[in-house]
Each structure stands twice: as C-alpha cells, then as structure tokens.
Image (cartoon, rainbow, N blue to C red; front, side, top):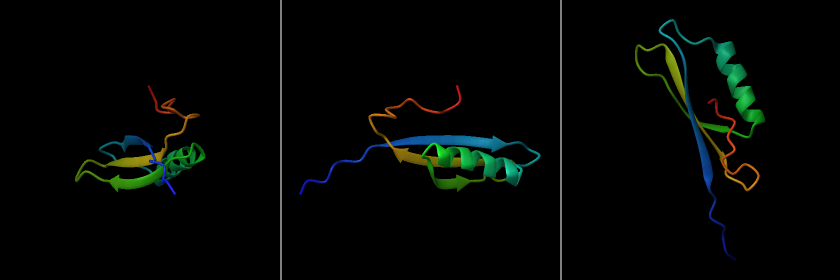
Length: 72
C-alpha cells in the first residue's frame, strides 16, 4: 500500500493591540476559520504586546489549491 504525501496550506495571523485582545473577537475568528477548514496548531502571545499570533493549517486539495480565504 502506498501512502499519499499530504500537502498542507498554512495561515498565520496576529490580532489585538497594546490594549489587548477580546476573547469574543478571538472566538469569532476561530469559528470562521473552522468553517473554512482551518485547524489551529499554535497560539503565541508576544510578551507585553497585548497581541495574539495564531497559526493554523488545512490540507491542500485541488479544490482549495491556494485560493486562500486570507485577507489581502
């Protein structure tokens, strides 16, 4: 049996400001990403920044083929 090599598409986004990040904003964004097939793999909070950096991935398919839902 031959295992197919899986390709991934990644997404990284930093949200928030020096005043912090509201939980409801993070939750809404994550729900949107989940509906688009993204799975969060890491969350970083740069010390003292009040920001959150979120890293996610999803399988790269012919249908998706880099037609990202990323903001421009």
